[in-house]
Image (tube, rainbow, N blue to C red):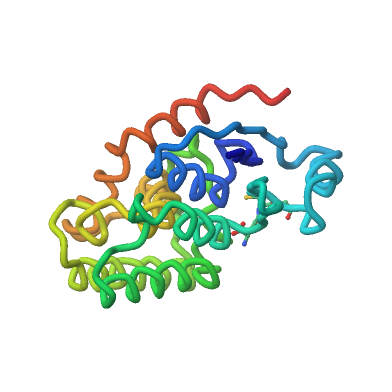
Length: 210
Ligand SMILES: N[C@@H](CCC(=O)N[C@@H](CS)C(=O)NCC(=O)O)C(=O)O
């Protein structure tokens, strides 16, 4: 078995955080390589591995997989015993729906609240599209919790791929000091207490671009 994850800076690469958390959930060994983002050769270096020119990428004996969602689906299929998606079919459908919504939406949040582990300040004014995204995320998290069959503090009770997907959102909400309803704030704290996230956060805060 060979799994090699190519990521961007841990400080900045929200998309890279997702498959790294999923791999940690599975608990399989893998190697990791960083392509520093926003450097003159960043795109060229990514193009050496994939025509997308983007990270994350997962190199496997089944080929190089581009895109965080595709990587997580590959891992879920390859390691079914890890239970990356909820076991219950209705909860699983909701988890996939939530991840797909995240994957293809929330542009206001992404545009105005860039992912940076070192950020620690509110915006003077949250633009309307960012605020609408925040409100929708709070509602979406409540929908996930309502669909959960298993117990636990994560979106679907037990840890799942959905938490890997929404961990970067939790970072944005906390680092931009967004005031949240109690349940959403508790979920953000759950992410910040997740040991795999804490390891990524520590590494990201200590990162030195080479
Ligand atoms: N939808 C893709 C997005 C990947 C993406 O945009 N990655 C960023 C880094 S977080 C990137 O490679 N940016 C460099 C570029 O676009 O040239 C995924 O889920 O993996």
